[in-house]
Image 1 (cartoon, helix red, strand yellow):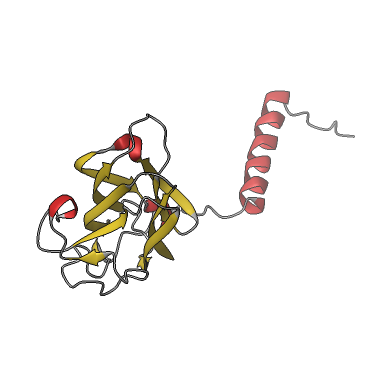
Image 2: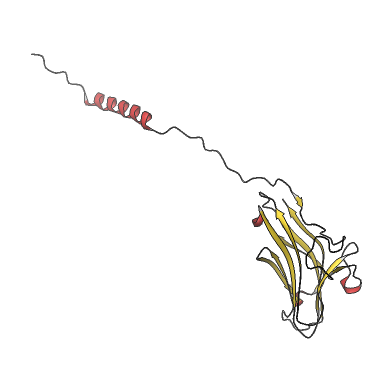
Length: 192
């Protein structure tokens, strides 16, 4: 009778490795190409406000019944002939300018800017009278009589609102006693 041929253990291990690799190749899921997903680009960069410099009077702005005008003196515009004047009554009042706009999807580098002049008769360093800047329900800026001075550019990153329709608003609140005027000009909401 013939004795069985014994194979060396190294050879058995090598053969088992080849069989395991072949089985793995059959059972492994197919390789999937990984595509890089990048944010959508801003399709329509540019100005989205209607009448941003107020040069067409109150056109495009809600709540602008008397606040947008060809003011002179302390409320004179920074550029052009028209500006918006909120406050200045020396009485408890709330006034607001609003405009609803759409910030296109992908425009995550969008900026709201406005030139604000603050004229006040308040003398104490206490914020009695305020101007609040909102996009939708989010406050993006707040100024007061303490920030008095000539026109100054104020800018706010509003890229978080890309792909949304929102209302941009400027609201002044004045207390009693002495006036604070918030003069606005050259507003811009530039998408990018």
